[in-house]
Every structure is written in structure tokens, then in C-alpha cells.
Amino acid sequence: MATYRLNVNGRQREVTTDPSTPLLWVLRDELKMTGTKYGCGISACGACTVHLDGVATRSCVVPVSMIDDRPIVTIEGIGADPVGRAVQNAWIDKDVVQCGYCQSGQIMSAVALLKNTSNPTDVNIEESMGGNLCRCATYVRIREAIKSAAKQVK
Amino acid sequence: MSRIRSIALLISLALSCALFLLMAGAASFADEPPVSTAQGLEAWQQVYSVLTHPRCINCHTATHYPQQGDDRHRHFANVVRGPGNTGVPGLNCASCHQKANADSTGVPGGNGWHLAPLSMKWQDENDQPLSSVMVCRSLKDRSKNHNLDGPGLLKHHEEEPLVHWAWNPGRRPDGSIRTLPPLTHEEFVAATKRWVEAGMPCPTGK
Image: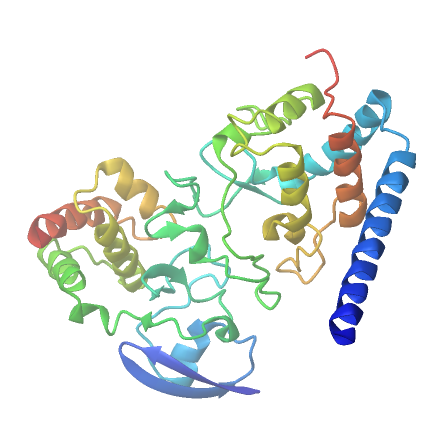
């Protein structure tokens, strides 16, 4: 066991856990932040996506010992960011969500895309969102919402 | 005055020793037989056997995606190369690959995880390894290899962290150790050195 000080959504949090514990389980079990979802556990579905120092990261495969002082932003904190807020608004406007399980990961990846590519093409969206699976197949609405959010951010 | 003489004597002695050692080293170097082209070609085949091992070639693709596994299948999760060979926003290499292997989750890692540039592709577009001739020509082509000369290539093989990773590739998600290249890192560097000393000869043919 080891103690880690993590910057989560701008707040310092302290957790004592096994160094090999994936960040996902630190967030969900230790910090009780359950917005980030467990999907596959092998980084194949994207449901667990958070931002680690601004990079969309699959929290299910990153041990807490490798976080260091990099800031973590989760779905609970992304609305404080202008791009994050725009994406969340677009998600509501376009009524993207069906069952909703994958959507926190989808939103985190979409924000990472828009922070790097202000006017994404269909190819940009397909490539950047290609690792986020949606069993309800809301992909068309996701694409519309990302384009809508891009316009709001401008 | 005698102190100054003593210091001068000491300096003179030190210079003489240094000169002697330099000459001895040069004589020793001169005593080493030069590496012949045949020996260089033999060394190259050893280097090639490492370069085309899955731990190396999986990130030297000719396509817009990396590969994984000993069967060199396409990387899962729709990972793509991206303009900087590090993936795309939302799906970067760093989305999963951290600074070191994560053995508890089976994800390999190392500093600066990325695909080799397309100029350093060692496969064709059907994911088949290029011939020894083609990889050799490509490797020493300074317009393709970040302008590395022989010593530069040797240094790359000796020191590059992602080259080192091939001999410390960590565990798969099932807990088993990933396979290693056919030579040790020391043997790989020694083979590269012999190839460089032989003038970096490439096999003939296609």
C-alpha cells in the first residue's frame, strides 16, 4: 500500500491504495466518483476515459502509481471547462444519450478532440472517437453534437 | 622555486603518461583486424533478425495503424497513426501507454511511446516485413533515418529507450511475459557495431 496525492478536478485528494490499482478504481471506489464508468477493463471501449494532463486517458489501464502530479479531470469536472460545457450542452441539445453508459467517456474524448481540433471533419471525429464504443449506436448523434459544440466554442 | 619545478615535473609526467596511453590505445585499435564486408553482411543479418521481430516491427508499419502481438495483428480499439505518429486527440498512444510497463493491466509502456515515421517503415502495405535488402537500404538512408550516420545509428540502438523496451517488454494482460528479440541487447549492439565498422554493407538483390 502507498499513499498518493492526486489533483482531481482541481482538488487535492489523498488515497492510500496498492500502487498497481488502476486509476478508474481509485476514482470509483476510493473517491466515490462514479461518473467514470467501467466498461471492458482493457482499454477497448473508452467508457472509463478521463483527462490526464489534458490527454484523454483510459483510466482502467493506468496504475495510480504512474499518475504522479499530472492533473486529472473527470466527467464530474469537465463542465467547468468552456469546451466541456459546450460539449455537454450539445449532448443535451442533440439528445445524444440512449442508455447513457458510455456517454461520460464519449464526452471526455469529444472534449479532447475539440481542444486540439476546433473544426473537426468527419474523419477527425471517426478517428478520435474510434476507441469509444456505444452499444446503442448513437454515433450519428455524437457526430452531430461534436459539430454543434465546435460551432458553440467558436 | 623548487616547488614550481616539482609542479612542472608532475605536469610533464602526467602528459607523458597520457601520450603513452593514447599511443598504446591507437596501437591496440590498429591491431584489431578490420571488419570485412562479409563479416559486416553477417552482422547485418543479425541486426535484421531483431528489427523484424514483433517487438520492433509492430511500430514500424507502412500503414495508418500500429500492430500488436507476436502475430502482428492490427492494434485493437481502432488506434490510428495520426499526423505526428502518436495517435489522434481522444485516442493518443498516451491514452493507454504510460512511461513504463503497467504489468498489473498488461499495457506496455515507455517514455515517448510512438510509431516510427513512415520513412522508417519496415513492412509493406500488406503488413509483410520488407526484405533484408530493403530494410538495410532504408536504415542507412539519411534522408529517411533522421540524418543518422553509422555512429548515430549505433548510438540509437545502444541508447534509445524504446529500443531498450524491446528487451523489457513487460507482461501481457494474461500475465505471461512478451517474447524477446532473437539476440540480447548487447549482441544486437555488437552486431550493429560490426556492421557499421564494415561500412554498413547491404545485401544485393531486392
